[in-house]
View (cartoon, rainbow, N blue to C red):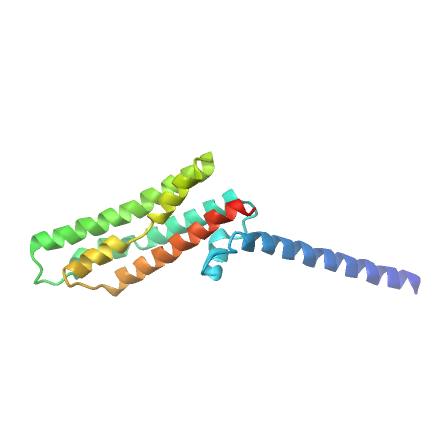
Amino acid sequence: MALKNNISFSLALVATAVVLFAATANCQATNHCAVAADKALCVTLVKGAKTWPEAMTNALQATLQKANVAKSVVDGIPEKLSPSLEPQSKESIKKTCQDAYKSIIDNSKECLGYVKNGDPFSSLKTYLSSIGYTDCVDGLNDFGESLPEVSQFSTDMRKFANTLLAIADSKKKN
């Protein structure tokens, strides 16, 4: 009987340790997301990272992946513009949207470098703040154009940028 109780106690102790370990790991991931407005998105982006550099790297790589998936949306903008637009207007929109897309990619990569090299925190936050696609949406609006998939991509990038800034801010707290 004593052996049976010892085995039960040992199993309960092991189960408790496993639960505490899992809770600690989850807590570390959510600490990076403490001030994020969209905590679910943040937890998805950091992918269980234990350290701040891992969290930032994972989130920036996810941002680049999201942007790469949206490349077809960006490339398809010219064909979806109103046929009544002047050619120079279409070219202006195309250039603005391509430049905005390139900026997302370049700024995300620049931020990866800052995280890897431990460059100034203020530089990182400046580049994170500039990850967005509003210039393209504004350019479309200036010509009376609206493309829902472009607006959605812009909204997604704004959410990613805000979440990246929240993760960046967690560096001070960890």
